[in-house]
Length: 222
Image 1 (spheres, rainbow, N blue to C red):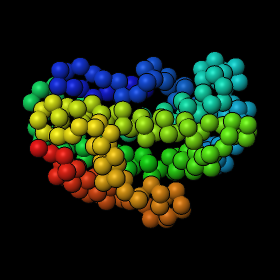
Image 2 (cartoon, rainbow, N blue to C red):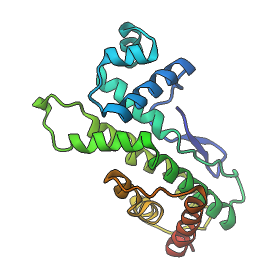
Image 3 (cartoon, one colour):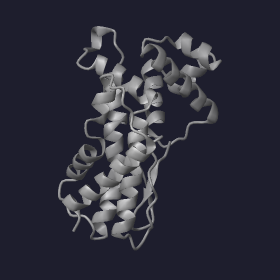
Image 4 (cartoon, helix red, strand yellow):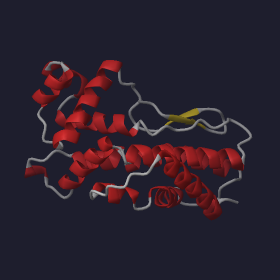
């Protein structure tokens, strides 16, 4: 699962720490885990995954290690569905940067508000603050590391490319991500997590994403 963005030098920078790609069969297993989480949260057993995915426990442990390893891979697989645009190696324009930001934001909104992401995040929230001896998995920590933190790692090269091209100005690399997250996502995620029934249409996501990109450039554009 190696999402990348081309920098000004034309080199690709990995957007998350996991560099190997999941095979088609592994993706089928991870999709089975996501389906189970939609149905029953993260209380599923490894045996239930085996039944749903038609695989053996030995295969699961060989591929993913323990249950936390399986959950980590599942979160990474879901997060990888937010596609990173590839920017030109040279001559990045403000129009191209704005288009890249808008495209990323629209895709991000679509993935975050999907039933699969909602199930993952609801389960993660239920584990927040649980101690190591609580019998709970590390899902909260796993989602934080491979969700928001991974999105920041994925966007950092995009922001850096904009700064290198003289299109963006910022000092702290965390600043543009926090601002862009607020503009693009707003209260949408918390509303769907709390059971809001209104889902954004594709046209509404694209409109909100385009507005977020424009507002972001108004804040950080040179």
